[in-house]
Length: 421
Image (cartoon, rainbow, N blue to C red; front, side):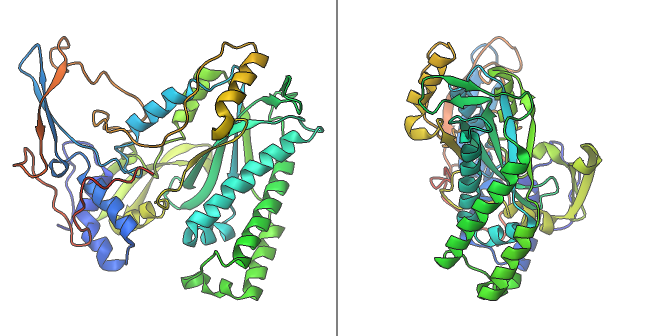
């Protein structure tokens, strides 16, 4: 069904926009299967079409029906429980030192290439930024140590425009070259010069991008089709090299507890959360945005529903692409041994570490997707009993709530197929 949507009795969700205006979107755009599947999963998440279970309080008559999550990593409703489990695992790995936050951003000329070649260019973004931090930190003029850090890829800005960048969370210090002592950062502000980071990052990224082009790994179409010609390609690189690339470093923040809360804001976010949506009226979507040019002032942005869906799909990552990566002494292969060594040098108690997993866990009790968990076992009515599962709801049995109307562009998908990459 198309047209206007009255203000719902519950908060507006991305799923409502997809169900209401998905057919309009597919009538206008040709969409690859992986993006069709994302929309299909988002539209069906925690609805009767995916099955579920019935929970009954063991102390009062209260009963609740809970439907299954789609487990798609691009779904706004499926990230809260994933983030909570991931943060619990990361708490075992934090060091008792200050941490810095560094952001590496691609210029617009490169961002356009990334949109058509996401797997290659996003991979180069991780590689170039990771090498830059490690190389500059190893220089005795700056720190002279081997550092470790976590990087998270984001591809969006507040208005859902394509804006690829990586957030790096870096401990303030590192292991000496011989590995026998911890080298503390010498400055209270960021211990690596941002101007140097920017120049090194630009050089490394351009070199890796040139290699990918020479090896035929980049494809161009539409407005970028001319870049297939070597002359046009070289001109694009020349323009990019002459510009200053943005590398931003925030002031250091506190210890492990503060870092955990800070990480929760960045690790498992999707392009837009349901909490930012305000209304869907007459085919127009209005949502909250922060105007960083005005000091982070809250304002609103209004797009047609079709344009909203188009921008949302720009941020679907290639299947299997890891958006959270570790570098230096925090690299997955030797993380446990390296962190134990760091703790010994910092006189911290040894703690076991957990290898990273981005596999979502199906916990449909946190619909906000904000990274927080409520007491999902407690009965919300009597506040004394616990909610216990009394029966399962199969996907093929009569449903306890209306099934969302699928639109022509989305083919039914089996709930056994999930994007857990």
